[in-house]
Image (cartoon, rainbow, N blue to C red; front, side):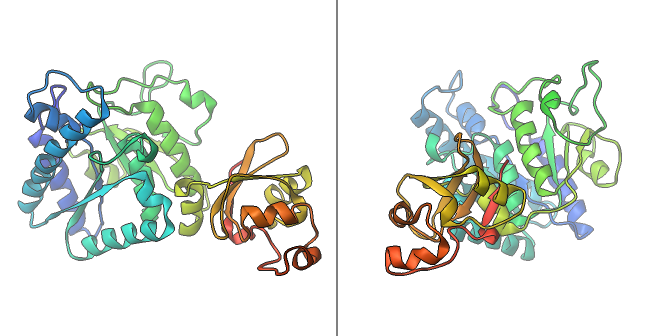
Length: 349
């Protein structure tokens, strides 16, 4: 979107985006930009003939390209009286609850001060273990941090195509059939594509927000979408919005271990919205402490939930299968009646 296939910055495109952001700010609509382009710009600046294949070279290209990319946004926004506020993130930044909250606070402060947050993955330090895997996923994570009202994906395609090659106006719900539709082509320097977007969109709409995919090169595309025009493809949200804490648990927090439970516990969690008790625990895997995030799996191994545990893996090995009234006699103490309280639990299946 913001670079051509040879990696050069498309200043006209960035200028158009920033002008539209300014017009929305004038209408009291707050906008956060999640951008790609640092590696592509760095490749061009360093005179490389192709995208590097090894991580250190990609990180070097990002280090050179990131400041040039941000300068382009800052110059374009300054014409309208705004500053670009750079936010560089890795997945690790959002896995920790405190840092998750701090990222949101920083972005809100930038908005309050009149700056426009411009978010990108911190490619110079990211390794596979802490990478988002593309800005499509990063954008979804930023939406969860802020509980933003909507997400617009500006792409090189006009939207999601049906089997006849026509752009779908509205997708009520993403299904397996949706992923089989024409996914279009990703740019030469991109690492995402429609499949990655659809995975992120499914996550976002389940959390309760709408998403639009549209061609970023179209005239005034952001303003037209916000005005309600039929531009691109609209993906409809679920009726209920997830709370911030539940979003972090479901989409950002990384489990430190797994608790396997019996079929009765699965039904209590999934169908009755109950807390997890020690009596339903069959097996414990991994090493984790009190307050860590764990996955909850059913008898056949399918992960059905994630949650914050009140007991360590060592304690659970002692009290698994026990009744609540037996916990104190087994451990010599009892922190809570529940292993995971329903308020600190999200159902995945």
